[in-house]
Length: 579
Image (cartoon, rainbow, N blue to C red; front, top):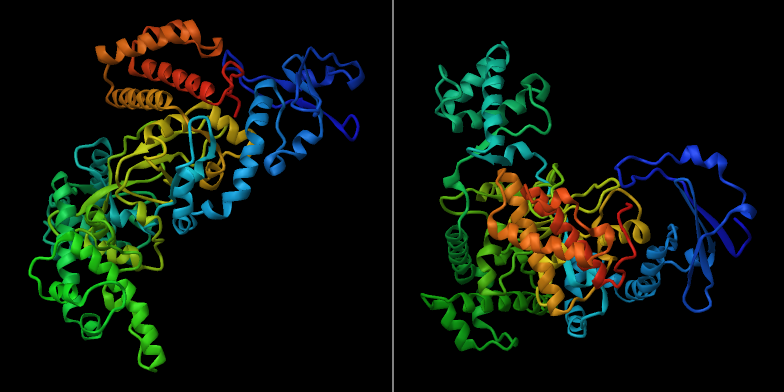
């Protein structure tokens, strides 16, 4: 500390430089001069009468003479290195973020709060225009997914994939181990025969073999059986994976079950006969009670009327000292609600499982490979009615995030140590607690443009410098990040870059070379970057060859960084690559 109003900030952390090697600040620190002898080579004038920040270097060290009030005024009073580009970000976004968080945080800090304040948030969305600063948490809703409590019981890899082939090898090894164990062998063979397997060829009937595993785990320890906690043993057949018609069948079946219950349950008799006082005509209600074919629109209206009627009926009963009607009488599971006919198949499948042929749906955990843009995990979860019954009610499991199941959104790797955020577009699926999700409102910003922004260096830089400098990417921290509303042209550009990045990533998974159309587009982009972008965003000569899909992806990510810098009004003030 120089004096109470000024601070000397020395950046003495190891950091990677252009050649990829880490600096060695411990070698330069002993020769750093005292404050009175330091030479400051540059200065950044702060807004208003806040003074200036002076900058200097000594070897790999960077030092700054700073008005101490800078950090006291920061959102969350964060302590950051005040380089010129960082100061520009601070001056542009610190006050807007503080104001927005102060005004809105209690309404957006969680998914339920977001839902409870939907009308206010929607009204706010209508006021946004290009250039406005908002918060990620104001334009995107989301949360954590579920916990199965026993992944091996419910999850499996798709037949024919590399992961499934590994399970096939392990299946033989586990079987050999069990047959060699005097305690396990009789139990294993007994279960195998009971489930229709061949005791002479234990792994021939895969379904029978898989049916033995959970009962064996109840009798013997994982160690004795040769399992680790993370081992999966199920292989999913392609024919058992959900298709659009399976969602529809689940909905039609659930609709029929509920209609039958509502029409025949004695506890609901008064709904059809009494004066509802809820804006629904007796004629319409009586018609729906007897009507053979109830449309999806009519069913959704009926569902809403029942949920309005129940508290009103119980209020009447309370005054008359009559027995209350429990909500379970309606037959709806907790959070199961039918509002929009188009969304009914999804809702029915979430809360009741699959009724017909299909049994498995896509499942996503936190991507252990840390991929950006898309993942490559052929993982599925048993979503049969019995499984959903257990997952949604068992105390061991954690049933959460379900309202976002079977919708698309943006997820990210939960831990990123000194690297930029790794965000991915997530296709409709069920996801777990390690696969946090934010879904932007499409009417506010295109989801793929949102994905591109999250994958920019700048957004990661902001989080690490001004929100929370930890390796964890928690959803609450993302909600407080600033987002600048793009113009239609900027939004279109970001979306197109994300689409091309996703294509390039798919090609890297497949080990395929980039097709001519992608290569031509990215080559033009590389030329534009070299001609107009800041020097630190110029693609190298090797990248410009576009020899591989990974080269294409690297150029596209440079373009994403450039577009984001322009959107946030800090073009050329980077690189923003120290995390």
